[in-house]
Length: 114
Image 1 (cartoon, helix red, strand yellow):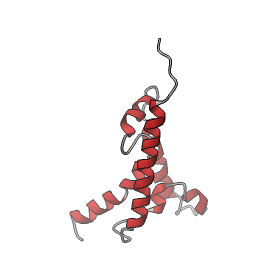
Image 2: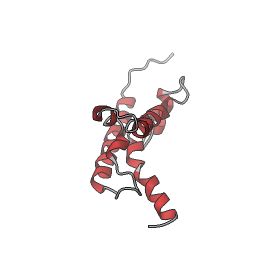
Image 3: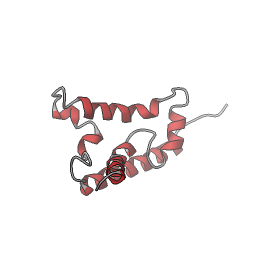
Image 4: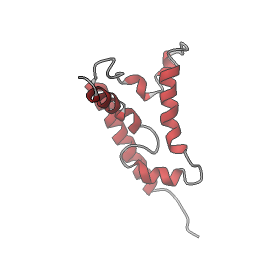
């Protein structure tokens, strides 16, 4: 792979990890708007924190338990490493399950109208 294909592969490899962040991924839009209506920017903080843990943690020799918190840690760093389909599928399934659970719980919340 060369040129644009390498960049596209690197971008798409992180998609499963981003889907696990609160307010992102399938079904995350309405839940994010409701949860973060009074706190702008709260939906992206999880993804940014996970990315920072993955990029800064190894350089500072953070323990593996801390690095494992980031979903980016479990995916291959494409194009430097070969794409791992199994890890990407597990992360994608986890994102779909968590998004579905979030939507279900969001619909069953206990709100009272004024």
